[in-house]
Image (cartoon, rainbow, N blue to C red; front, side):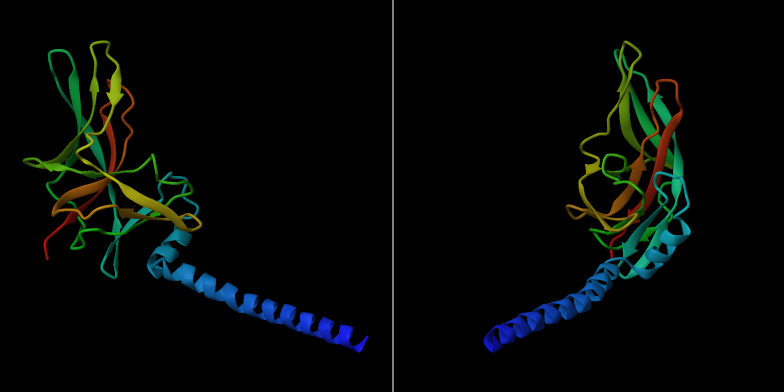
Length: 205
């Protein structure tokens, strides 16, 4: 009987030790998760929580510095062809307001849903007084076919690091130039709305 009680005490001791270790580990996991998201982004997530926009806010990291990207509305421009018309999105200005030196910047997106399939990371061309890129064609049947140029698209990885906070990372280094996170609103042939661009520049150090 004494041997059995001794085994039960040892088993209880292991159980209590495991509970203590688990209790200590949970805060550590929370701290580790918080360390993935800059404090400014966490604060803004609270401020924008009530927003009904699909994308509530976009941030880009420049080293340890957090920069908020503002969206600008684009205009759809039609270039007529013999059989099909090509459509470009044009955004004002030859450079974005925010610039970073990192060739593979990290983004934090505040959104209830995954940005995959809704946001596109694109390389944009610089015109005389604007930034532009191809967004689709209109066929002879007057049907608009939205499609971004694969050469301008940049693949990225996305993960939800906290509720409503998504971390985006390009899968390759980017060259110096103009870029943006693009949300398309272009749905019809006659629409002049070309969507929104969260623009940024990559500059050489």
